[in-house]
Length: 122
Image 1 (cartoon, one colour):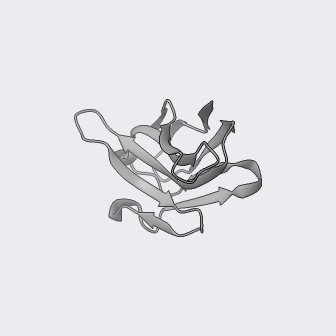
Image 2: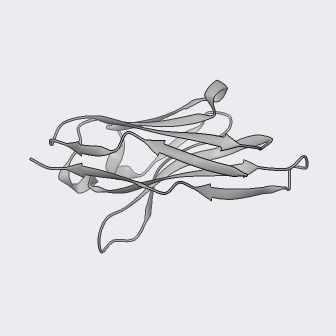
């Protein structure tokens, strides 16, 4: 059993900051890529940031220079540091992880958090 537990969402003023956290819990052998997606009303879900098991990160162009993704390997946690937030960042943010759940490397699947609301408004 594996689950992703998210925290850190909320409402913030334009220009403000938030830190989202996602903790993987349960029984598993390895965490591979982890990342954050978001979906705003009427828009398709998009990848915001992703970080590999080796620490290589990627970002969607709209958040480059403002957001930063990081892993805490000891705590099975991924963070998304969001700075200079804009109203356009308002969305439900979802944690995602590629997790090896069995002893063999092929025993893996993607898992999703339930989502946390981020609202940027005056």
